[in-house]
Length: 251
Ligand SMILES: NC(=O)c1ccc[n+]([C@@H]2O[C@H](COP(=O)([O-])OP(=O)(O)OC[C@H]3O[C@@H](n4cnc5c(N)ncnc54)[C@H](O)[C@@H]3O)[C@@H](O)[C@H]2O)c1
Image: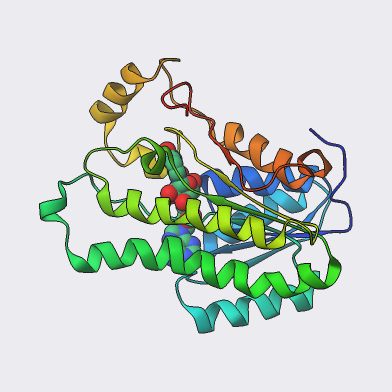
């Protein structure tokens, strides 16, 4: 897709330093958007910003922890000043943890999942909405997971936080449906990124064997869905979950 329908718009991608965030930032740039990449790993965000700039749009890297509200307010102010208010927002920063049964989960681990995925999405979307309301146009996409839709053993805290995002997306979509702002989720299956690779080669092979397509997805599979939702093509999509997942789950 390269309809250039986002030319002149600013997009913001959290977790833009790697994986799905980086691939989606590049896809949004190919649609013409200038892109701000926010990531707790500043060097990774800088690297992504360099790749995005090569597409021929403006880019900006900001090192920030999305769970820190005060730091996020400063990061968003910086983006507005340098690139203009982001009207396209991909709230995607996330963490995984080694699979473990819930009885071994700590409260700190539970809280961190909610801090990064849920609070991080609050700070990102809440901070960007006023400009979208003013423009009467906006695109919001959040990264959930098939862990939320189908459940995955050993990932209870992660799944609970990703499930919260589905409720967030559906209710927010209703609030802004008449205001030109769409709100959707991508719920990836198992995708070849550092986060999934961290489970180890044996576990990756086992998971692949359980996927109907018998292979993991690529970050570009998610980026294509994000670009579709954010570009003009996605104008009638709101409150939806798009789940590129090789067949592991369908409603
Ligand atoms: N890879 C998969 O199989 C898969 C499946 C479903 C959902 N997801 C979700 O996709 C999103 C992207 O993950 P990925 O697979 O690209 O992993 P990744 O580890 O390659 O990328 C995640 C990025 O988020 C950044 N990040 C982590 N915590 C942050 C924080 N507090 N503030 C700012 N940035 C932070 C990391 O530095 C990293 O650059 C996550 O929300 C993840 O939960 C991934």
